[in-house]
Length: 254
Image 1 (cartoon, rainbow, N blue to C red):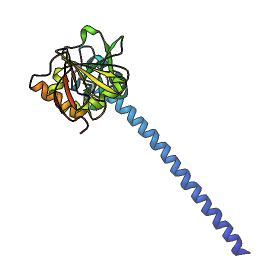
Image 2: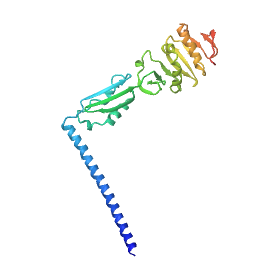
Image 3: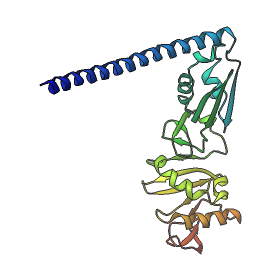
Image 4: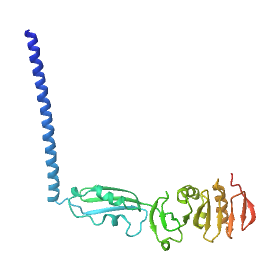
């Protein structure tokens, strides 16, 4: 009986010990949290008193954006206040809403500077939907709508149903044919399956629906040799037909 009583007493003692250990740990955590909160508040107050305020904003830009669309235009003039009160997320939110900005990073460069880095989208063409012109980037994503008079002379126009979705594939091929890019005035997607290229000399070049790259190589050579002129150049078959007359052959199915 005495042993059983002792065992019960020992269990109670152990349970009370655990209870006091847990209670002490919880109390310590609460006190630590309060202490850290007070320290953080103290640092913010101290930072204002000793003058740790925003002094400069450094902006690093890659690419180009027109006046009124640049990073500094988005964020405006930041208030000269404590560095701890400035919201990085708020600045980033303003930047990323700009349709010209591809990506952005913002961080505090203590003691008194905000550092911003932005990459602008590169407009590569103007998409015409039959009513309006829209600048598009290398991924054929919209940048912004523009007036027809603001389309640059050296910027091609793409049009036709489904043109914007299919232009990425054509653009990757065109990267190997710089003479075509310089000579092209517009790209027209025809019958949802193939492209016509209108050159700046008003020549219409008809490309095949499949295996376009060989036809592009033929056209690039013709432009270099300055024989890509006339009303039309048809490269849809293995024959090179200029103004309805066969002048040679190539192999678009290669």
